[in-house]
Image (cartoon, rainbow, N blue to C red; front, side, top):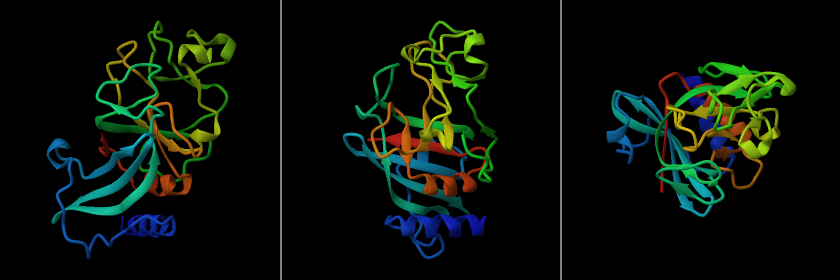
Length: 220
């Protein structure tokens, strides 16, 4: 764990973000502290206007919450954030969400989460009429039992922005129309359709640090 924290701090420092030693910094009370139960790892994403946000990475220790990485630049939905999102709104959902598993077109970078390396037959089902709406599916395009046309909301996962990604547990009840395919993923330098995106090298270090039970907290 100490090695991963050191690597994460070094990477964020090189990217220009403000990083403090988890030992030297005073213990703080982050904004999400009363809403995350017993979680020990939380990624905080706070909007700073438009499609921009800042990300802070927090670890709970015996002394309390301590920041590992601070002020990481992040991109969010092209239309900002909303407490409740719907398909096609281009907004990032606000709230506290689980980080369920990771995936990417590249090999597993050593994350503590379950990891799926995706290829041309991996999809995120966005078809609101499909019984597998808002889940990852594997099938040949011509054989998929759901609509694979991008206009349906379905995404093929073999794209550069998904070099690495972590699934956010948004709309886990899979209510049609309440949005799906929300990830923390590699940035292409611009706004997202509702996801949270950061520099790939920084994302890899965060993924190496993540363990089951980690949460992502999103707010304005």
